[in-house]
Image 1: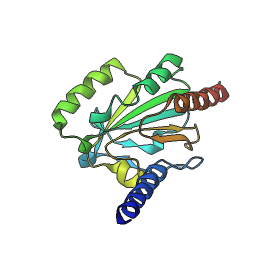
Image 2: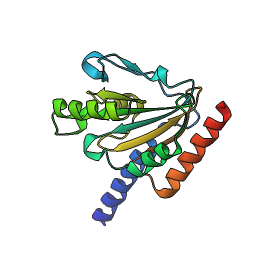
Image 3: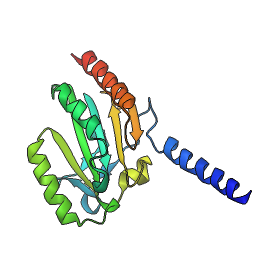
Length: 179
């Protein structure tokens, strides 16, 4: 009996963590700036969530060990070939979520920045988005922000085919409104 209770409690904790770790839909996420000892953009400048306005933004928050988890979602977005006038992407890397050394991750990110110049790459050295936005740690999170900065879609962990279709539909509709 005790095992069943412990299992039930652990299941509730797991489900609660999963349900409540995504950003609230329809709200503007609290302002966060990643700079200095906390990280920042690849060029060393600060990154602020205040930049997530003016067009549709997709933010991926990734543990380097889970960076491939949502490749299907990011490839689906890439295939849409949205105009940078209406669409932007940010990849925030949870540097503290891995055993890999920061210099090695930074080298990989520099290569990615050259390959994908329209994506803003941000290093989060101290798990700022985990602490301030309650995004899942050691995972891969995808959030879509509307031009007004409101969260339109937020998912922690691997997206299913249905989740990817839902996300693409939201981005399509929002981009179309901006044209």
